Image (tube, rainbow, N blue to C red; front, side, top):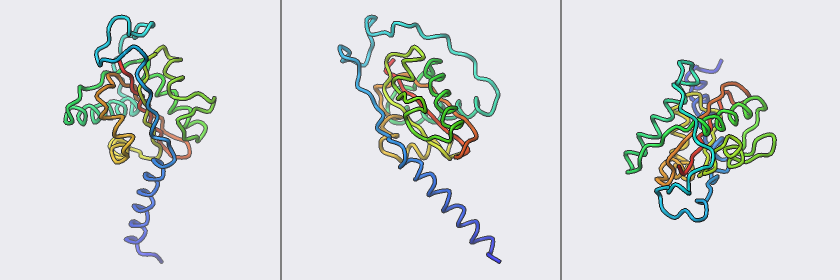
Length: 190
């Protein structure tokens, strides 16, 4: 028989390796330059997206809604601590992020490129958001804190979270699939 302490230690080590492996498998540098003609952080009326933002919906009480709200809280707390304004949730970015997490979970697929071949910017634009700045994804962590911590320990993911040029976010969590949980956070310039 193997002592329980050794099994527990092996489980923790295996879980830690999976977190680091999930970060290594994704290209964290999914960041996009500002649209041409937009050199200042404040958007002028001509820089606004052509499609108006839908009104934000009130978060529900499902586990997914709570997880998404907690990621948003953790990210905004870190941003404020580092001198950046909090991000506002944009329903278009939320939808793009949710659909991507659901696609990854449904197909046990882990990539910034969706199973239909679209990248993050294309997915955000398909939801009517024209000013995408970056995207973070993760797979395997089963709590918002674990996903957030994994992102903060990855230089490129951390840079996306603490990038003061981003003003909007969308968050999508899907439970299930090969890795048990899939996390997407999309960022936008407006």
